[in-house]
Length: 440
Ligand SMILES: Cc1ncc(COP(=O)(O)O)c(C=O)c1O
View (cartoon, rainbow, N blue to C red):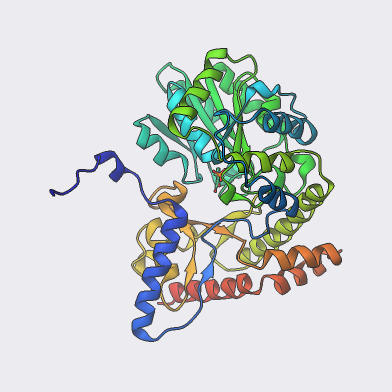
């Protein structure tokens, strides 16, 4: 047998962040085993909800395990009705179930969407890594729009309008992730309105990736782009983050208001062609996760509070390290740590690029895992790192918060250190890293 020929475009995509962090750790462990180092690793790299799947959802999956038959490619009717009701209750979105499609995670839905929608895609940077590799696999054009720290890493409508006017005059699709991975930023209603206005003027659709919507710490501050720009938004959300069920692989996409019947049919056609349907037991179980359920409502309230406490305390601890500037997250479970004030010191120590930063942080003796460089789509000379604050026993933190929630800021500080000690030891280790980097 000759060497198996592989399509060159596969070489154009890099390993997704979760696998990449895992590989880094495995390589470093190997190196450590040679020197007899047993020091622990600090996990700020992998972003996965630390909490348990809500019990009603877990039970429902067991109850539906017998459902072995194929089902509707666009999602079973009962689930799409439940998702419609959920969107009404939580986001004040009035969506007919016929405008909702269900997919194998929002990642799967985005892949389908990119294969259907014409024109080029705009990815604001910094960004979650997931979009660009999918676009490269599709051979689709995309442009990167750089957001600035002075704008809170949000899209500034004036420069965005200028950016769009320089692109070829065709249809575009802007990816707007709110709350934002990796900075934890949340857009206000007014900010969304200004972005929508620019998009309307430049024939630009929006993929509103709202997978972290229900983790917004002050949920009353969250507005779905589906309310602001209903005619031009594809709103994606799912079970992975706010219900901690990433492994269930179930998400939904709301198609734009008044979109054509052809667009709806095309979604079904591509879904049926590529994966037939999302697992039928999972779809049936998910009905429980979208229908009104007081236990799940309480789960949202508690998990978002615990995320808020961890994010606030951790970002403050990072900001106390001289040379690092961290964003203060308002949603999701990440913030961005900016090491650029240390760039000369880093370069003198051989850390020349943003990609090198993740490697040097994981080196012995620090063992700190982060995501940097192309994995958050920043420029090679931008020393920024995404910090995920989920390395703790979520079940324990959830139960303790439920029994006795901290009531003051100082009680919250104690709660965070008590429930997530490794994250704070990791921050102390980071301080040592910075001190070493600065040493001449
Ligand atoms: C911003 C963002 N969008 C989408 C996803 C994908 O989520 P899903 O599990 O629904 O595919 C993730 C997962 O990490 C994410 O961080």
